[in-house]
Length: 225
Image 1 (cartoon, rainbow, N blue to C red):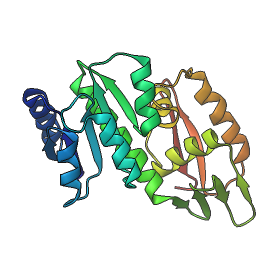
Image 2: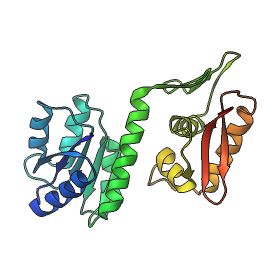
Image 3: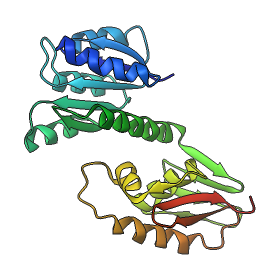
Image 4: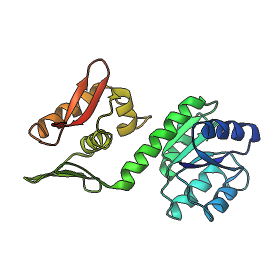
């Protein structure tokens, strides 16, 4: 069970977030300000933090700065009432992983939390293998018994996402959100271009292939079963 800290000074909003997260299988810890978040982290490990920005004592920005200075690497989803690009830019610069503006759609929040957790797990694993092919996250290298090659960043991240979820189908929009991020100004055709490049690179790979799901998107599958 994933453990989540919800930091929000409005009791009604915080409890609403917590209720939907618990309903969807998360273990939730609540905090009304950044100071309480840091206190909780002294006694427990969490997988993700959902934090408002405007909070008393220690606000979201100060909390985020402190977390990254102390070496905490869990994803942080920032939620704010400020619909301002400068604030968004500041949050990402300080180390936020995603950003939502109030009033938020609760179901969208769940999707974003799930995506951040999947991405975090992929990064923490660092290495993944299918048959005789190994994908090394830190170096963007792909190794086989015959050779090795380093991939451009987005090609590797796209491939890593698909192979780590081998057998699962993803839409182009899901892939864009996972690999390029929710706020990236990228067209869905970009996914097709990168998929074609990967197919050419690994046309003769004996362990996996990327197939098209008509009218939907793509998935990686193991060859020969």
